[in-house]
Length: 153
Image 1 (cartoon, rainbow, N blue to C red):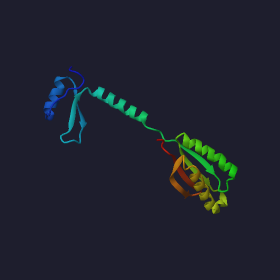
Image 2: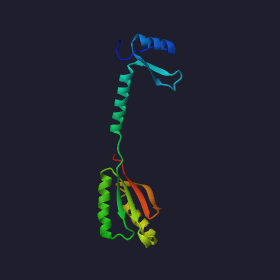
Image 3: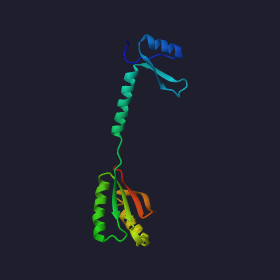
């Protein structure tokens, strides 16, 4: 066996297969859509192992999006609003997305303008920490708004 990978010039498929058999290695197709297709003579088991290892590293580096929720009523009191706003600030500082929503129970749906005002007030007060991803939108008995944390420079 010669090394891990063998560099081979341009061959047709038969020559490449013969060369791979001589070296007791496998002919692995790297890029099938290229013209001509790109192949590599290597140990296939080792190739799969390295590919899985690369994918695992990429997956570990990927950031996971955390969404925190805050629920309001259409007539939430000032003290309760301030208390929940502090939680929202903490969530955005920690890098989590924020889903703020107003839940309308029973006939309180007639106060949907108050719910929208409440969410817009929250968005304007948290403007330095996060940006609005989705403006307040009524979906059934819920009016939801999404805030994303601002990236640190």
